[in-house]
Image (cartoon, rainbow, N blue to C red; front, side, top):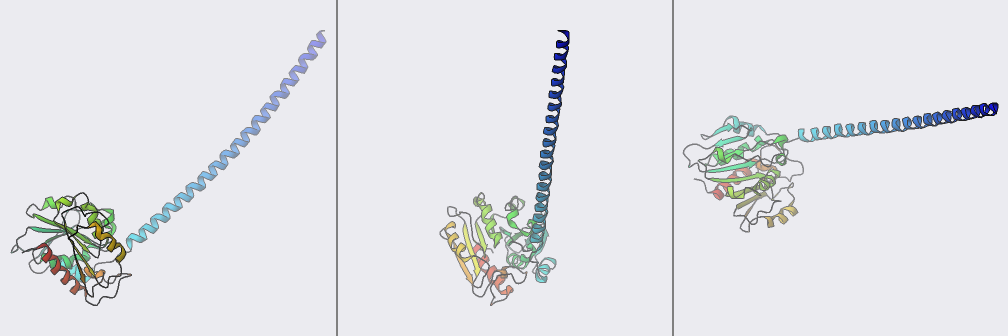
Amino acid sequence: MKSEIETSGITETSETNETNETNETNETIETNEINKINKKRHSRGKIAAAILAALIVLLLVVSGIYVSDYYHADDAAEAAIAQPAGGLEVLTGDEGELVFCPSAEHDLHTGLIFYPGGKVEYTAYAPLMSRLAGQGLTCILLKMPFNLAILDTGAADGITAQYPDITDWYIGGHSLGGVCACMYLEDHASEYEGVLLLGAYSSTDLSGTDLDVLCIYGSEDGVMDREKYAQSLGNLPADYSEYVIEGGCHAGFGSYGAQEGDGSPAISGEEQQTITADLVLTWVDVH
């Protein structure tokens, strides 16, 4: 009897050992499989991270190339700032904006805040601003980050408060700058008398405002989308004014040379800017 019990115990012990060995083997296999899966996941994660990093670098490179490729102000623009004529004074504001101050002989109650065109150095509009300021219109030429007004549509914030003597304010811009000026007006229309659009249109609905609107573009403008311009006229008050400069082009409002995609002008940039200044001065009725 004792032998049978002992034999039985030996058998039971043997079976237990085999079961433990089997369990250990299974656990080892499972552990190895889990490790393999984790390694695969880790490897996939590293690949995904590397791809994401490469895409970010590529985006930064492309963005850097895009914003560094812009139209530079020419010598005439630089001279208008460095050597202002006719008693003008050109000052630089806290945010880099240029302030074209008319001489004291004028009744200085009217001001214009101007948004520059996209990818155009803002100083390129100095000659036009000088022509306007020479006849009594104080002009604030805004500086935009990376020469793109769309990156700071609220750049006009706080400007009017700095000049309490100016009672009649206008705002405007060229090309993309005009579009962004209208975007700003969506919440500030009551603060301005009117908006000036040079080779530009409004994608913002301003039709219900009391703003005076002056649209000017050149007959040879090859950059402004005419179809979008025509469609956008419904966003303006019904009594807007429009003037087409015969022989003028898109780039002629600034002094930065020819612009890609533009038409061939039949008049000089100086002529176009002189015509523009006369139209604007009549519109705002400065003295």
